[in-house]
Image (cartoon, rainbow, N blue to C red; front, side):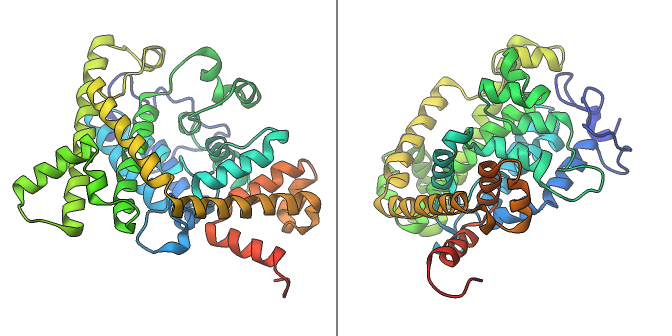
Amino acid sequence: MRDAEQHLAPYAVSAANSRGRQFPEAPPFGRSEFERDRDRIIHSAAFRRLEYKTQVFVNTEGDLYRTRLTHSLEVAQIARSIARNLDLNEELTEAVALAHDLGHTPFGHAGQDALNECMQPHGGFEHNLQSLRVVDELEEKYAAYNGLNLCFETRESILKHCSRPNAERLGDVADRFLTNRRPVLEAQVTNLADEIAYNNHDIDDGLRSGLITLEQAAEVRLFKTHLDKVLARHPGLDGRRLIHETVRGIINALVSDLLTESRRRIAQHRPADLREAQLAPALIGFSDDMLELNRELKAFLRKSLYQHYQVLRATMKARLVVKDLFHIFMDDPRLLPPQFFQRAQADVPRAIADYIAGMTDRYAMKEHHRLTVPGPAF
């Protein structure tokens, strides 16, 4: 066992209790199996494309707003810190955090909603199912197999949600959705680190963009508490420093609460091993008080940022682009690039969904322009 795993709790994922890879490989040299997973994810084409995929703001709107790539890195940082403090597997946690958005469409949730609507007659579309499809099938880097051949626990943790029909189709990687088991604790950590990251960084981007004001944000209890603390320590502070210090304080409070509450739950249920941890109630979570404060924050963002008329305009345009592309390719799959046209011989709608989901924001806009605006074909 590597030194890095000697401190792990008995209910953490480790090399000793891992179910391994679908295709057996020689053990890695100088790194753990889950570090190998992390490295394969970082070197994947899907990970590179996250640089130009949107969180809330379309990629062309500015260079300083979060993208799926920067979001994934921020999630990984928060998740690793939590995992380390709970004696969980940092490398697995980091791998899942970096992979969790690999299947996201261009244009954020607007793109996903539009593609899911188009795919309803064909099994639907969900980005975390697509993330698993990316690492299991769509990446083409190795001679012996499709995908990245990640460890079972990494693949299972990427699959955050799954309907019963999809679980039955996917087999053992989705078995926990059929047997009422929770994800491993490392996946639970990543899910909540994702929530911490996107809520607070959406506030930051919303304030930076001017779509929400400091006065509006100060109506939210969690934001006001930490805004007041910053102003008490630094009277007269304003601008970017004031916002950064406030958001930093909120993130620290959320992580601290999560650690305290999770330790309490673990001590209460005392799981002896990985299996008992998955059969227990959720062991990673916020206290009731923090959960309520977090709900207020999310409600504020939904009303004041995500439903802001400028965001809704961008959302409308994004939906049109995705729907137009889908229907154009459904009408004539020969317009697909050769590798996707070849895949379409088995399943046209799914091949189109794979193609669109893999697009960056600006590539989708260029492809839409090429196919809908008179002019040169390329």
